[in-house]
Length: 311
Picture 1 (tube, helix red, strand yellow):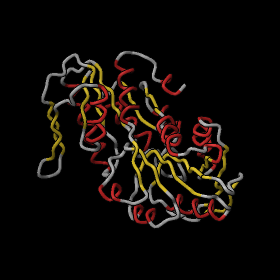
Picture 2 (tube, rainbow, N blue to C red):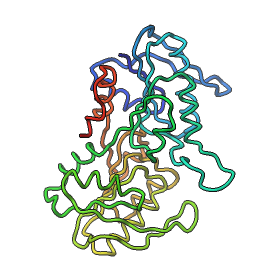
Picture 3 (cartoon, one colour):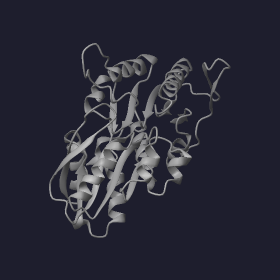
């Protein structure tokens, strides 16, 4: 087994390598003057079980092309098996046709990764479950719930006062999975989006008065939904609001927006390598998925069950 990484999340790749007790593989991923990507594998991989860790986060297209070219390089270097480890799968929010004459970009990206020559995919908290079926190769969709649950149990001494909140109807399954870990109550924020990029919180379904609320979601981008949801929960009597989000996209002015919000804390994973601005934010904290990803990689390499990680 050999683990390699592109440029999107070297810090996470190094942490996963430490968990696996193996060195990170030697490969150069660089750009020519015209910004074409060039990959050179700097060690023998013939007959090896190769894992490539690369989130397709911002800049999405650059990191996606890095992944595709790395896959091709390993395929042409006679690797026995190639697994793409994609902690954050870009284009996941384009999983269906929202209107006429629009693409399903998530399916296109899945096709591109498959055609490049990868044998299987490991990813984390896909935005929509059906994306797993977009691949025609074995694909494991891991869940960050165990990592979040461990952090919640360490932070809150009185779990009986915790309510897990989904910021919309579509995220109820994810929120329920976390709530079951410590037998917490569930609430839902009912919101209506007036125009793209903006959201308006309408009302709360469930009892939140006097409770410590945990907002659970897969992606935080602009941060508008989270901030509006926090305002609505506090207006309905919540004692505090903390958000647990898997993928911290945090584009535009999201960090400033969250820093100035009523959120007690935003907890994100390192599926996307955090910027210095994120690390310096007073109410944003990063928890690591390195052990989870490392264990999934180890089990894949030894042909053990990955799904049993979440039993």
